[in-house]
Length: 499
Ligand SMILES: Nc1ncnc2c1ncn2[C@@H]1O[C@H](COP(=O)(O)OP(=O)(O)OP(=O)(O)O)[C@@H](O)[C@H]1O
Ligand SMILES: [Mg+2]
Image (cartoon, rainbow, N blue to C red; front, side, top):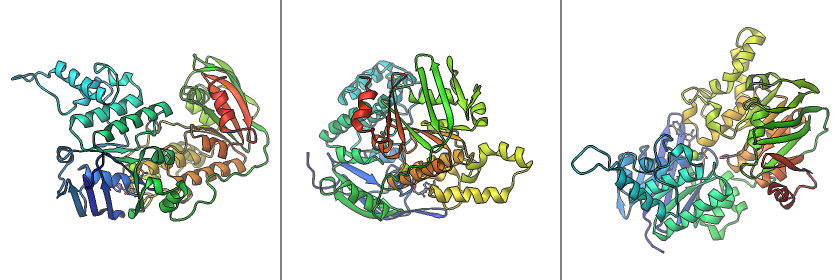
């Protein structure tokens, strides 16, 4: 379905927060039946722009034109009544309610003449909307019992109930498996057929090329340009995003490997981790590959003492250790950056500096009996620089940082503990291309400092580009190990599917 006039147009949009010019004269056009990608580095202003059009924030300047009419958007409900719905970076479903209750949350239907919620009607309507996107979850299921992919579907069904003509998806796939992502794309194609305009934010370049018709690029809050997907290459887009050519996406350097820092022997945990043995030396990055559900995160959490092992031994620096909790693991110099960043306990109402230093206070205090504010401040500054955390200063509250920059704060927090063994789980999820490279540099730096890094990743290019060695898991077992020279997409996939 082709339409010539945009359903939604934003013209000359500017927005400032204290100390931050988040958007400066930005424009976009979204057409019915088309997917528009919004692309840009962490902190470029993507979410802010979308929060403006969906009524979360007020713009300072500029015009918003919906269906040809200029409109002042007063709030979320107003935006929704205009047909504009946003599915935020952080999903907002309520786990203890049913699918149907979530879909009609805030728009409950009451039985005629009563204050009683009409459950039958809501269930039927939910089913109707779920059917429209080819999703067959039971509307009576509690949301906590369904997977993340289906939660996305609920958010989309919810958008459909509001008769949306523009649906905004802010990084919808960061927590989805490949299969779930493909399912989402099918749904997006269905939405396109209905003539809905989709605005799609993602850091995953492959997805942009699979699903988006056109792309608007922002950099540092400024409008860089809009292009048709068919006219550009990945490299073109990266250049637009970061303002320069990224020479080498995966900087790799081999360093001298020394003693074995971590040795895991016959580790088992329930039916999730089965008899896993491996070792890693100082100066080494071990990539851990596998499909979703292969047990990689469970393995990491068992080593870290988050899950109780059933059997097996762990040796650090040649000595057998007894790890019963994350606290023990940290004591032995093992740190784990979890894939579920929410659990990492960022304290949103505290500053960047406080968040970075928070878990370190204890060790600082013990060592020096008092916190040396000055050296701490300097160290925080260094991490902000090294990870290019985009913030006006270290006193900024973490809740005001963009999604990707919040993640960098977590990484900084762990790096400041200077662990011997660092386990990172999907370290670049939600992180832009430029910053990804910086994170790889940090991992390389750790390696050259004689640390060991275990990197769990579902990003094949990252596994191949960064690892010294790749270990592949399938259904809780290690099914293969490949040297850097031997590792290819094919060889890894073969082990990952367990043949
Ligand atoms: N409520 C706020 N208060 C202060 N600054 C803010 C606020 N919201 C966003 N910012 C700042 O505005 C800039 C743009 O942030 P935004 O969240 O739009 O980035 P983004 O492009 O979505 O990045 P990411 O890819 O990391 O999600 C950032 O510098 C961010 O710190
Ligand atoms: Mg964002």
